[in-house]
Image 1 (cartoon, rainbow, N blue to C red):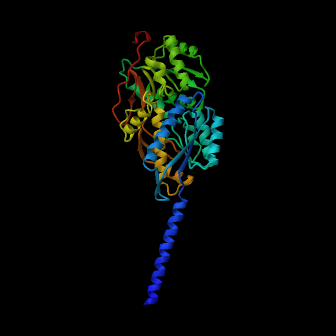
Image 2 (image 1 turned 135 degrees about the vertical axis):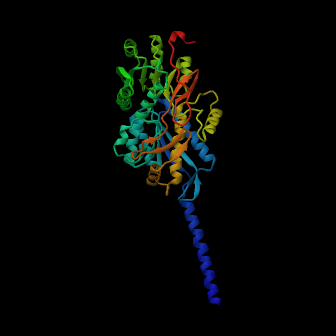
Image 3 (image 1 turned 90 degrees about the horizontal axis):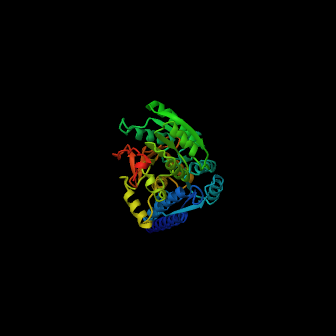
Length: 406
């Protein structure tokens, strides 16, 4: 009996010892933070959008860390997020070097950038390094047709943006509806891809592309394009200019007294500084509506309230919410991953099914996001949703001549 008791005591001591040792090893293996990296244009021609994206990321990190971090299955504990951002200065070659540096620093995932030019460079590096990459405003679909496994775009793509623009035209009463479209094609992959879909969808829906003109990313004088569109009687304009170009286009359209019924610049008018720069001349302009402060999705009110408390004199641009949403997608995948490593996070991203501050997000087999197709329009100083599959949008306003605007 005494021998049995001794054996039992030894067994209990051994069990306690090994359990305690396992706990210590378990705790020691858990990292102090979850390191995530991003190369973003904080300076250069895309800085306005890049800063908005970074603001969205930072606010998402704050909310996550205020709640203790992300619950990681592997360690059964919450671990805070460490976000490392490097400025690529709106230069794709620097995007590459910044992401390579982040790879060497052992980040578990990359977050995307504002402009498609930089994103295309970035996702190639992500695939090469086998680092999961979650985009935020990449719209070029074609790069997702190359069999990549590590890149995910939880946002609208070219075909969605073109479709939403035509949905907005369809919503205008027939007697006022524009029918002749001028397509100003930016000479980058995104611009060319939008042209392909605009030609296809316009024909299917009974619209005429009456004029097509091409322009480079560094173009500043658009007068010849504008005059050609005016001469051709185009009552609608579609383009994906850089943010500075979107402002220059509107200023020059006003100077040349060209006021089409519908103008859609997918990029530029969606930024936080657009109204501050353009004032009432921004009215009637359509743009990306992926996210606005008024969206009714869970968590959006807190995002808006906290952002406005931090930046009381700054309007919120679409990329702020897009950045926040992208971080939600990545954080969700990390929480569902079996391990805190790149491959496990990548695998978890493939089964994403989450409602973010801008709506539901899932991915197809290519990593292209299944997201709501939405479009916004500046109306009386406010960016409002005019196309949405999830809730009733505001009516589309037909632009009046410049001389009749107050």
